[in-house]
Length: 80
Image 1 (cartoon, one colour):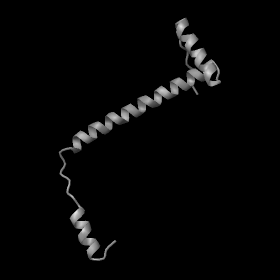
Image 2: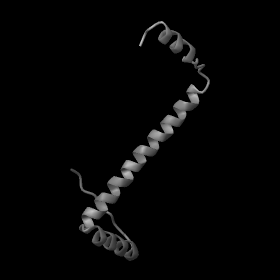
Image 3: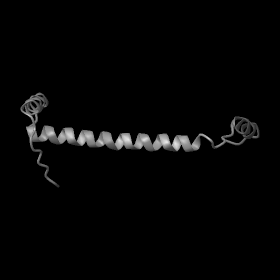
């Protein structure tokens, strides 16, 4: 596992992080790690959402048939 060093964190930010860590019952390091992991996961999800938007846009011109009539016909013929 890698280590990360963050330099020049403002006193105000550090105090907020310490307060959050205390509220969550974690060390400052564990709190910072949890925030980084949560944000990285959010970036992954946003990237996936963007990929899905592009996919939807490319598929918007693909004709799609309504299979309802065909399914009803198959059911009437005894198929399941």
